[in-house]
Structures are given as C-alpha cells and as structure tokens.
Length: 129
Image (cartoon, rainbow, N blue to C red):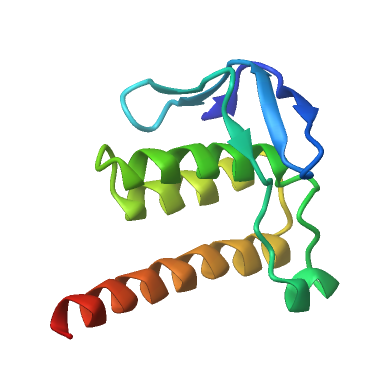
C-alpha cells in the first residue's frame, strides 16, 4: 500500500505558508515502488481552498500532507516534468492513504480538477486570440 514514509516538518512563514525544513517522502507501491520526494526548502500554502468553500473544508487538516505533496507535483507540472492528471491522481491517492473522509476528498479532488480545466480553457483561449 502507498504511504508517507517520513514526517512533514516545516516552519510557518509570516505569509501563512509552510516552508518544508526536512525532505518528506511519499511511497507509491501501486506504481512500481515509486518514491516522490518533497525537498527541504519547498514552500506550500497547504490546500488552496477558496473562501466560499471553507464552510465545507479547511485549508489545513487530515489532507494537509497530501496538499503539500500536490503543490510540489504542480510545481513539477509547470516545469513540464509531470502531467496535471498525474498530480491530481497522486493527490487523491494520498488523501485515501491519510484516510480523508470521502466527502472532503470529493470536494478537494474535484476542486483541483475544476481548476485544471479552467487553466486549460484559459490557455486555449489565450492561444486563439
């Protein structure tokens, strides 16, 4: 089974973000024993939950570690190293590992999928104009 193999250690910055102070790892057993390493020095805003949806889910909670992992993977996506689908798939998998409730997992997962679709449409329109 996939798992987080190291603790999430960091420092809360003045802007409210988390600065990772020690690398933490996520092990993906289902994917040829892949290990994703979030490096020391990486900065995350936890879960980017729009204010309106915070009545349903907080930016910080059981999903915090998967959210930091997702932020890191999204940074790799912007560098062209992984696909956006991969980022979101790993996020959903990691939330299952952390036993995030189905209700919160659905909100968070479809939130990131909707945002990815929005970015895709925005880029498409930018290229057409």
